[in-house]
Structure formats: structure tokens, C-alpha cells
Amino acid sequence: MSTTRPRIRRLPLNAAAFLTVLVCLFPVYWMVATAFTPTRDIQSDNPRIIPASWTLDHFRTAVGAAGFGLFWRNSVLVTLSAVLLALVIALGSAYAVARMRWKGRRQFMLMVFIAQMAPWESLIIPVYIISRDTDMLDRLPTLTLVYFMMTLPFTIIVLRGFIGTIPPELEESAQVDGCTRFGAFRRIAFPLLAPGLMATSLFGYITAWNEFTYANFLIIKQQDHRTLPVWLSSFQNVFGTDWGATMAASTLFAAPALVIFLLLQRHVTSGFAAGAVKG
Amino acid sequence: MSSVREQIASRPSLGPGQHRETSDTASRRPSQSSGRGIWPYLLIAPAVLGTLYLLVYPLIRAVVISLQDFGLRQLILGHAKFVGFRNYGTLLGDSAFWEVVRRTFLFMAINVVLIMTLSTLVALMVERLGRCGRTTVLSALVLTWAMPVISATTVFQWLFHSEFGIVNEVLTGLGFESFDRYPWFAHGPAAFAIVVALVVWQSVPFAAITLYSALTTVPVELYESARIDGASGPRIFRSVTFPMIRPIFLLVFSLEVIWTFKAFVQIWVMTNGGPGDATTILPVYAVQTALSHQRYDLGSAASMVTVVLMSGVLVFYFRQMFRQEDELA
Image (tube, rainbow over all chains, first blue to last red; front, top):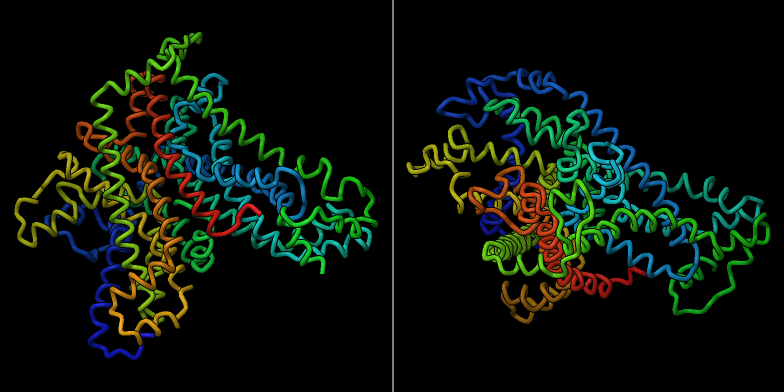
């Protein structure tokens, strides 16, 4: 509607847009730029916005740091198993909610919506004590279970929406042709659902990959079972003032999320508006 | 026709409906696949059990612990005694706790006001931008939103580093000599401001994009008729735009209030609640009391106070959401 306005009148608007982009991107840029800057330039009195020379040393330091591979493996393991578990269990629930009629369905969905807003920050103490009592402290399956519960409600909500968009006639006609209800779902609806499963699991991956609090308080003695976020938060204790290496580690940790979100930007914006997900 | 029925069937108010039977005549297990009986309950059982064990049980356990005398001794040996509401009494009688509550509300108020103001402005701006500018700004917002909390926190520590931080460098370069080697994290208000800046920086993208998508649903005709009536820009926003996006605005608002408590991570990593207790908000206080001072009972009580404070906003959020769309149907 405002494309016909003269250029001059659009100047403040464009300036504001430029400022917004600058404020949004500068910290991200500065992380990446510092990661590539030689230490001597990082610690100079006149830091340059664009590094004068580039180096990969910091990435070598970060990757070569004790335990990086191990913590990376732990993170991947916990994230994958939590998300897969959530997907399988959410698929059943979502199917029941979207395709079947039963007493208590509304109550179930209300439970899911409330669980989505669960006050995880206030449950650290009881979860710590329960894990201690059941000998689950310092173990990765504990984290897997917690992350599974963190991602489950959102997965159910979104999958229910996806299943709702697949016409039930497709399955019904397959059933008429002699499929069981399960067979009809597996052969007809499931292939159509695959993109939805992918998109949904992405949010789960990001949540589990980034989670810090529970990883920090549930893995205490067994340092071998730490995950990447905890390792990164203690990176400065390990490397002292080596900010180049810290930023390189930070970049390596953030890269998967940043790349995925840029590639899937369109889905992301509509998805998180629908599901109210906090990064 | 059955798709219409399917939609209608999803509204419980409308009819008991025996219409699903037709599709099941060819099925081998008619009684089980009719969509009634035991099957739906079997399908949701894992989710319900998971929620009960991983969410409801910890919550109940927290309530129980907050009513017990539960310290390091009881953690190791068990046999905690019930002491009624003594922990809550201790907590509410402690001026340090009230200081934390006051700070939590201050932190929440500053964050939410900044987030809502900035994101509304950004959303309005994005709507007015051309196609190219809009894509650029939205991409930048998404990238910011995707930045993992720990990475963002580390970067902000580096930006505000006293000796080599770029912020001090720029401020000194602009002539504010007092910022030369200014130790941001050693001063209470400065550390508080940085935490606020970090939380706002991370929260604006979600709020702005959600508000922007709400703005795009406002019919253009409304603006045109308002302009024909001679309404000014601010007047149009107050009388046309805002009433239209009000439901979404309130949703985002209550989400941001609730998410204030998620700043736990940023605070824990960046300042650990310090310097002194300048950045200690309720969840940080609860965890410090429990895990650093081994007073699990007091920590749980503080957590429960947090949950009660939050649940008020949560109820408001759910009422807004279910008014907005019949999500439960």
C-alpha cells in the first residue's frame, strides 16, 4: 500500500529496517568473525570489524579440546533418541485425537496444552531428587526422558494438525479394499505424513540440542556424560581467556540450528507462530 | 460427505453419530477399529503415563518436599519429617526472599515492556517494507531466533568483555572515556542491563514475527476507509490495527511474561545470579537455595511460589487461546 510513496518519505523506514537487521545480526556476525580472527588481532587495542587476516586455529583448538567428540556424540545420542521416542508416542496420540472419537479427548488435549507450558525451570529440584533416589543421576537416559517430555506436547499438537489435513476417505477406501485400520494408516496416511514428521521433529531436535539446565544439574559426577551446551558453558573455565576458541566452539555449536532455520525459514515462521515454541 | 461428517464429528456438541461403522464393515477387527472401545486409550496411554511420571509426579514431589524438613541429611538417609508450612513461613519472613520477588517482577516488567514495544514497532515496520526489505528483515529475525541460548549468552559475554569487548571499544571510541575497560559484570545494574538486553534480543524475533503475521490478516479495506475518514497514523493504529491484532498481542504478551522465568539459563551461565545477588530472580534463587546450600525444602517452596505466580498468567493465556480458536475440539 505504501509503494507509491516518494523515496524521501521512505528513508526513515529503511533506516529503521537497516538498524533492525544490524542489531539482529551483529552478535551472530561477531561470533563467527572472532572465531576466524587470529588471537593477536583479537587482543589488539584496535579491534577491526572485518578481520584483517583469517585463521582456522581456533576451530582446531575447539575440536581438539578434551572430550569434544565425546560430548558431541552424547548430545546427538540424547537428542535423537528423545525426538524419536516423542515422535512415535505422539503419532499414536495424535492419531487417536484426530481420527477417533472417545470420551476424554478434550481433557487429553487440555493436558497436552498445559504440559506444553510446563514450568521446567521450577521442576529442577524434584527431578534432581527423584533421579538421585532412583539411581538415574549422571546417566544419559535420564536426560533422554526429560527431553522427550519437553518435546512431546508440541509434537502431539502439530502432528494432530497434520493428520487432520489428510482426508480420511483415503484410509477408508483402503479399508474397504481389505486393509486393516492400522494397515490403511501405515500404507496411505503415513507416507503423506512424512514431511510433517520431518518438520515437527526439527523443533524437537533444536529444543533437545540446546537444553542446558537439566544437562547441567543431572550430570554432575560423570563428566563423560556431559552434553555440548554444558561443555560450551564451561569452555571459558577450560580455555581461560582464549576467546577465539570459545567463539569457534560457539559457532560450531550454533551452526546446525542456524543453517536449518535459514533453509526452512518459511516453515519455521508459520510453525512457531502456531506452536508457540521458545528457542 | 464423510469428510464433512469427520469435521462435524470433531465437535462433541453435535450428535453421537453412528456414521463410522460403514467403513469398518470390511475390516477384520470391527470392534477394535471402530474408533471407540479400548483403542484410543491404548494409543494415548504412553503419552499420559509419560506426563504423569515425568511432569505430574515431580510437581507433586516438589509440593511434598516443600512441606518437609529436607536437607542434605534427608537427601542421603531419607526419612524426611513433615513440618507443615514452616518452610513457607521461613521464606515469606525472609527479607532477602522479598528482595528477589521484587527483582523478579522488575525484571519481568522491563523485559516484557521492551519486548512488546520493540516487536510491535518491528512488525509494523516489516509490514510497510517492500518485498526485498521484508525478506531481509525476516531472515535476520529468524537467524536471531535460531541462535542457541548458550551460544548467544557466550557471545554477549564476549561483546561486553571488559578488556577486549567490542562494546567498550566502540563506546570509548565515541568519546565515553569512562567505558575504557569498564567491567560490566562487576556492577549490579550493568550486569542486570546486559541480561535484559540479551533476553530482549532473543525474544523480539518470535514476538515480532507472530505480530507481523497477525497484522497481515487485517483487511486493507479497513485502513482505506479509516484514511478516507481522515484518521491520522497513530489514530489508525489505536482504533483499527490494534483492536484487530489484540487477541494475538495478548497471547504473545502472556507468553513473554511466562517465558521470563526461562531467563534462568542466561543468568546462570552469565552471572550465576551475581554480582552479589543483582541478577538473582526467583528460579535462580530456588536452585541456589536447593543445590548450593542444600536446603531442598526451602528451594522447593520458592519454586512452588514461582509456579503459583506463573499459573495466574497461564490461566489468562489459556483463556485467550481457547477464545481465539477452539483448539480442543
